[in-house]
View (cartoon, rainbow, N blue to C red):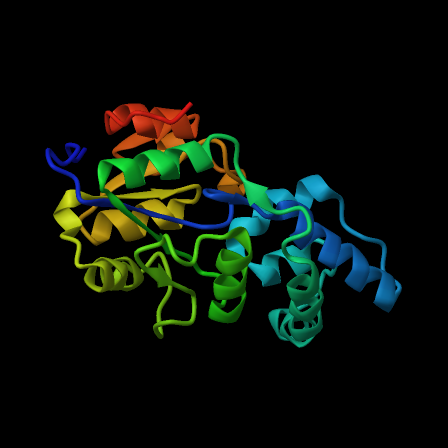
Length: 224
């Protein structure tokens, strides 16, 4: 396992399931879409588990169809989600104090997500992070997405961060792989969606149960 950088410069995060609990709105959009087409909606628990895999996996919770058929459904589903994506989506408990503590220490923080850019940018703005985040790399910023390390490296480049002095934090095996292959210290989080997997089996440098543990790891003073 990699050692924690002695003088870290910043932390890069996955978005859905790591910083934000977005599953309620993603499920609500699916319920609305199912109602439009006359299909019984999938249960919330099934959708929550696969959020990190993206819209196709969410649609598959309600439609047992080919990838091609699901792709045809995706534009309307995403349109519905876009219209309601900040109704119930909130940072996970402990995330806001963590981000405040990072900024007080002078550590940069950024986002690397597989979410489409137009949704990512709008959501980050609605949450109020646009002027705080050092870099945002979305699923369509490059021709490749996580688990490829290129989006993580691009975020480091845009923020002028040395990958060897940064952490990558995520709730999915692909986050750990992308961060590791990019040369960052990797953190798997147990508070996210996990895609039904065990984060201890992903090869992360450390597994944490709560955002405050990341603050403790970095010796940050969390605001009261």
